[in-house]
Amino acid sequence: MRKICITLLFFTALLSADDHTIAVLDFTGEGIHSDELKSLSAQFRIELLKMDTLRVLDYDEMRKTLSIAGYETPSCPTLSCGVIVSMLLEQEWLANAHIVKIGDAYIVEAQLFDTETGRVINVINYDKEISLDGLKTRGMHNVAELLLSTRIPLEVHQRQNLVYIKTKPSGAMVRVGRDTLSGQTPMALDRVLVESRPIIIMKEGYESFRVNQLPDDESDILYIELQHRVPQIGHLVFGDPVPEGIVIVSSDGEDRFLIEEKAVEFKDLSAGSYHLESRNHIIHKGEFRIRHRRTTQINPEIHLISDIEKQRDRYKKNRNIVMGVLGVSLGYRAYLSLESENLYKQYSSEIPEGDTRHKQIESMDKQKPIFDVLSIGLVFPIIYYHVKYVQMNRWLLQ
Image (cartoon, rainbow, N blue to C red; front, side, top):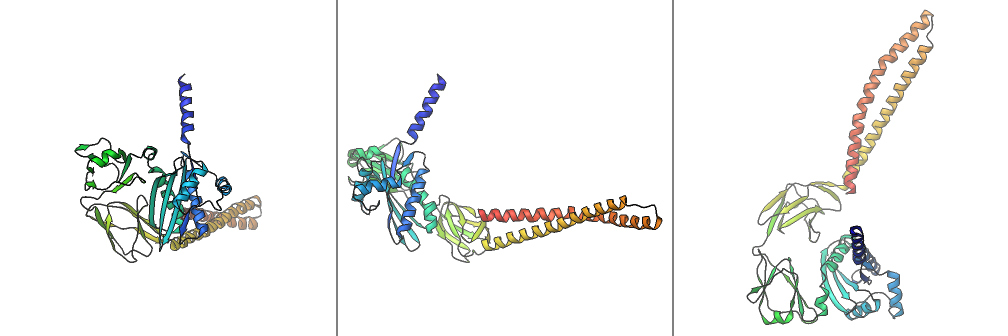
């Protein structure tokens, strides 16, 4: 009976694991080619497919459905269009995004629709200085995570008398009048309750926030970014001047700061964990942590990728040369053994001939230990060069 129950629970979990369906429109944008926008929306679908709880509508099926409804392309430049399309596709959710390129920065505004009601259940903004390749990989992953993991509970949108309070960071307490509510943000509150009494958002180490204005009926979402009581910043100092193209990246990948060439310091970093990145360099010992009002010194090992490639090729060449010498040494050693053995077999009773062959055998026997030692000695540089070659190759693959 117990096994049957466990089996039923297992299959129930499987059935409930993928009960959410979602469609993704082709992204719209400014300052970015339409082919790149399609590529980004395709990568976004891949990121959603990686989430165990989602089933993503097939692109060709979506295109066919919208074509029948009179839409030439599976994209929507306006909010009203997104609402209509979300209802046409008959999926649980619909995702859409608009991407704008300004200088070296990409600004992504993504929306998540509830197709049953046509309401927007989440809107996120992703604003980063990042390459197009970075936007396709890390950027689309982050947008997918933000859009789906921070979506507003459906009950907030099904009942217009609820207000959903989100804070950054989360885990803040909410005081309504003189009463501190149980639970922490994010949380949903009755709009009538919120409108009738003063609302204070509190979190240890942060300034208290007084809610002066509630969102209108169309949003139902109150987003509050709390401020530290004392700015949590610090400075970074480098042991040596930094080469061109080194970037400071936060541990969550959200923040990126380009360091000026030959700089020896970087000021006013928010407290947290960071690491150094570069397209043209391999960086070791580049992880560090900024603490409140402190200066952190690091001594990263920064190597040009082109230099590492040259070193790798040099180690490989040296390894192959030494292996070649070892092969010659072993070959000659084998020749000595075979030749001396043949001379032993041809040993004659005639004194002049026997003496000559004896001297030849003696000469070969004297050479054998030399080539034995040489062969053993060549093994160590081969191992060294191979290990260094593997190490350089591993650095390049990181």
